[in-house]
Image (cartoon, rainbow, N blue to C red; front, side):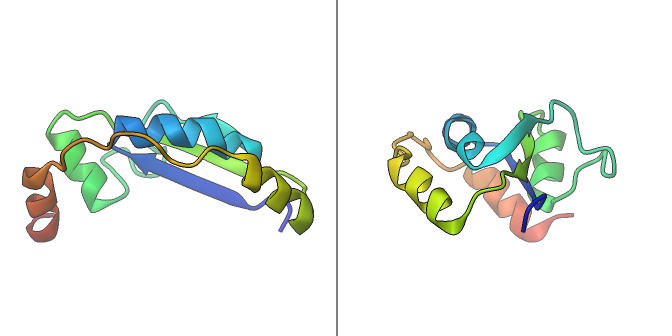
Length: 101
């Protein structure tokens, strides 16, 4: 659907750098350098916990480019595969996410 929106956020720097590389190929992508206006304390449990812990949360949104399915597939086939190091999972935050908020 032309004009469709995509919202992304992560607390993983490697994943964020990968997203910033590939998402603009299919979306008019914008970095959101602050919390979401409608959720200044956080939109998801993970974000709330990460913010409480002082972690960086990376956010962005995109508007779908007007591409045919064939055009989108051709672009996607040329995008690099994910090859980032996600690093060790933060087990403390994972555990808190399951039990808190």
